[in-house]
Amino acid sequence: MSLSLDATQLDRYSRHIIMDEVGPDGQSALLDASVLVVGAGGLGSPVIQYLAAAGVGTLGIADDDDVELSNLQRQIVHGDADVGRPKVESAADYVRTINPDVTVETHQTRVEPDNVEELVADYGFVVDASDNFRTRYLVNDACTLSDTPFSHGAIYKFEGQVTTFTTDGPCYRCLFPEAPPQGMVPDCASTGVLGVLPGTVGCIQATETVKYLLGEGKLLDGRMLFYDAMDMSFEEVAFKQNPDCPVCGDEPIESISQVEYAEEACPVNAD
Image (tube, rainbow, N blue to C red; front, side, top):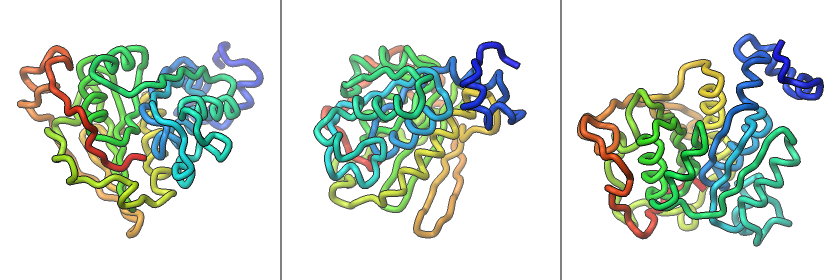
């Protein structure tokens, strides 16, 4: 049994420790891991909850928004008393009530070309729970260029999608080379989103994260999982690396500074 776990931890994580696929060594690996969650909204909420409960030792949370009343229908790490507070502060307080083993690092900032590489550099895995294409491409490019694995999730009304990107497969730009024109994808303020939907999609992202950290199971690398809550159905679509991809192809760029990013975000529901 791992000597790095104390008596309280052996009790807290007992249901992990008795599993052959986790055990005390796997739990110690989780406690030594560091994960950055980009977005503390609808998708980020269940990700943050379950990674904290699982004992991921260092949890970074990046978000520049404040909590609004309309968030509470789905962003379950925030409550009435948090309205008006920065989401990173509210989420960090929530984590501390769940698990004192977790060190929370808050980044109250918008992810931009001049800070994304520095943000990603401090973590072993990244969860993209953002709500716009610009941030998605920034996270993809920074992670891909630094060989940092990451999870992608998105939601729309009753539908969601999840995939995982590692250093051995395609990247987000292989799947979506360019963002759609602004106005083509409506945001949740104009179309709405089922409150429980991000819980399902975010839990899948958290599951992929824990599996990666444990080195167990088959990840959604090169596979996009589509979820339809109305039909309660899942569909899987395989995709491959694009040799012409500017980030992971045969002639990749060297830095995200070589890429132009739109100034205004093109919204898509992940929030």
